[in-house]
Image (cartoon, rainbow over all chains, first blue to last red; front, side, top):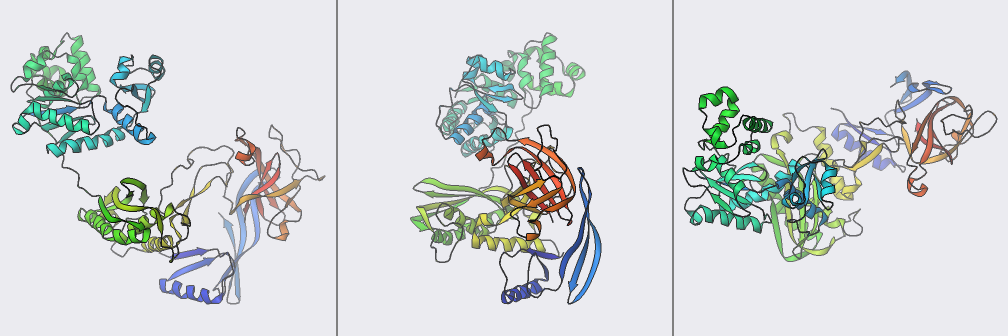
Length: 85
Length: 541
């Protein structure tokens, strides 16, 4: 079982408290996913080139989404196309 | 073995009136109020006062009300009947162990031979106890077997006892009409059919039926007929399924002198909470719902049922006591360390009552440890202890037309109640993938057609023009505050609801239509048209 903590900070988190949380996460062997800014992250995910499919002019409904997800990990960057859902 | 049967006629009505008096808090006279229990709009049971007005079993609701306009209508609820019968059983159990509940309103005990000065005296004593408990209409019958005793109880007057002497069951039963078979407990529809059949065959009394031979009855009326025949002869063996009294699991503690602060109460209830959990654990049970009552000046000042996502430990219980006592005071949301937790009235008694218990095996840790669930529960419990019970919430889905209506949240550990059901069709609902971001209050927006006129939707659901450009007024990022050309759009999904509410209550309800709009920048929005203008309800980020 993978333990995941999802967080959306409402204020800016300073590096000191972030490192305290880091240590706790490592002890519990869990993953923190943050929506927003976070100091010293391992990887940064971003969505690019979003395109919605299924809608025409006045017809259909939102059906699926094609997007390119880019991962920035320590300076290296890789990207891949995804279709959701 | 002699059997004493206690019968409370029309128990469903009595239980319903008890519940009514409890919920309304009004001390209305429950005895002479005409009342009826209905199921499927047909009178199922009615009490004597209603019968005197002409209400009958099997009548339709409207007919019953026209006969007796002040009739109290109660819904059928077998659970309620059983629940209110439980204290009656306990009352009799105090006098005589081995009570066998037959159905709500009817029970049997082995008749005491010599104690209480004979059978009639014993019945009078039981009657007195029942009247003290609030059940004034109870009748008793004593006989050699269960069937005869029940019939005797039905013949008795209110709070009276009819004793059939030993060996005289057959004589007593001989004169009874065959329609009493329709009411035998284990019969149901079969009993009614048999009673009807016997009447049509010209067997008018139980004596006529009993005179047939066993082989004839067995041939013609089958196994059920044979068992009724044995009872009608007064020779059926009596086997009482006596119950063991339920164990006393509730715990309470009294304070002398009464305690003023919640902290002191919490400190003092710790051992009681431990005793409560241990008492359950000895029977291999755990509590998942506990009712906590606090008494001040002899009255229950605060009572509440608490649920737990797993099962209660003594520490959880102490936390619940603290939240409950704090709930009434100001500043209950955040609990600081300096806050001594003044309570409104000095608490003199705290009681723990288990509402739902489950076998401990269902909640035991697995062989490879409890896993993440337990850690999450423990962590959330600590957060709850810090910031209060209501501050930690779990999102749940409910039914609704707009996306904001479909969201709901309940405090962690509570069961969601009072939500709109999900399994209804909800016409006008937006299909497809749910939007990622739903705005708490919709942002004002504007949508225009090619020539710059604001788009509207007519009463017949026709869109006045092609959606060309849109603008969101109060968005956080600048990019969408400018006019953005529409790449594609879908809709409208028209909804016309809550027009019967005034506008300030409804919060701008009425006629509306929803559109899914995709801009040229690739972002999709859920836009709502109302007669007042356009709004953004959600964004498909």
